[in-house]
Each structure stands twice: as C-alpha cells, then as structure tokens.
Length: 267
Image (cartoon, rainbow, N blue to C red):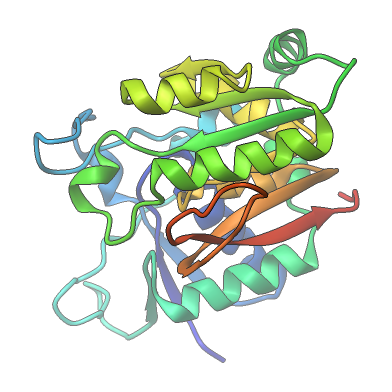
C-alpha cells in the first residue's frame, strides 16, 4: 500500500482541500504524514502588479483545527525522501495524484461537519443575504492571482453569466472580490443592481458563498471549496476551455465554459 507525504500550503481554500485529503487518507487506513513548513513563513499580502504571491498563515483554527495539533515532517524537496530515510509518494497542490484523492474524498462525503460555519459568521452572512429572493454570489479572484495565474477568468465572463442569471431568476446579486474592480466592470455590475463587496473578512466572504443559493466560482480554491462545503446550492465552476455563448441581442467574444454542480444536501 502507498505511503503518502502530504504538503499543505496556500490560503483558506487550499488548506481546506488539503485537510480533507489528509482526513480521507486516515479514514482509509492509509499511512500519511504532513509537511506544514509553509506556515513557518511570515504572512505576506501581495498585490497585482507587484510580483509574487501572498503567503498565508494557518486559517483552519477558525474551524477548531489548530496547527499545533498537527505534526509536521519536512519533505526533502530534491528527492522526495524523508530526512530519516524511507520513501513516500509526495502529494502537492496541482498534482494529479492529489487531485484524484481529493475527488474520491469529496465523493465519499462526511467532510462538511469538519468546517461548520461559526454561528456568529452564519448570522452575519444571513443578515447580508435576503430570504425574499434568490441570492447569487459571484467570486472574482484578482489581487496577487494576476501575478502568477496561467488562466484568469476575464471580467467579461463574470458579467455575462451574471446577466444570464439575472434574466432567469431576478436575484439579489453579490460580487465578492479581493481587490477593487475596474470602473467599467463595476459599472456593469451596478447596472444589474449588484452589491459589490471588496476585500471583506475572509471567513465572512466564505460563509456568504456557502449560504447563497447560486455561487459563480472563479478558478480559485477559495470559492470552489465554498461550493463543495455548501449543503444545498447550485454552483457554476469555470473550465479553462472557452465557449462561445450567446445572449439575445448580443454577440459576445469567446467566454468561459462553466460546469454546473448541484449540491442536493448531505453531510
């Protein structure tokens, strides 16, 4: 049987998915240890155009998962060997083996109970949302992501899918972003009656996405993890392959292809 050395790093979404993989492997009786050395670095917030990426602190303490409760074993990066000898399969973000295990874990379920929204944040999210209409949250990842991402979902794609959804549902529309939007983008959303929430509390933003009825994700683990943790929600997750979409009376350029995920409820 394989033995794994799982590296967890990055922001809230990456940490959530990493911890889900860790708990799933343990539940299957598989030998797994962690490399948490990323979190020994000093936290740093990078901005678009400045180069580099943000360095995040451990965020799962919010869900009563303290870093101090987990044992870290640094990976010998050049060889994949443990310092004390022996070899394990190293699991890092973006690698196919880790993604496959994560998919198995999400299918198996039982992980939502690990990340319950604290009551104060749940109440704050529900106060911002409304029960009178369908609530749609659109997450636009910008900020430091623009410095390093190989594929950034264009603003036009988010505007376009928002127009489609507004025609169908007449919703309350919320735009969540980690940085200010360009004026043209902001005006386009405001014409739809959207409430634009920029750089809000990390956990409140995540709670808002989980509590909304429809979530439009960016290609970011932050919003995709919110989609996976929602117990009942329609989520649109972007693919990297473009698709020409049409709205009556408009001929748009190439836009993003979206995968629709329906959470029917569950654990």
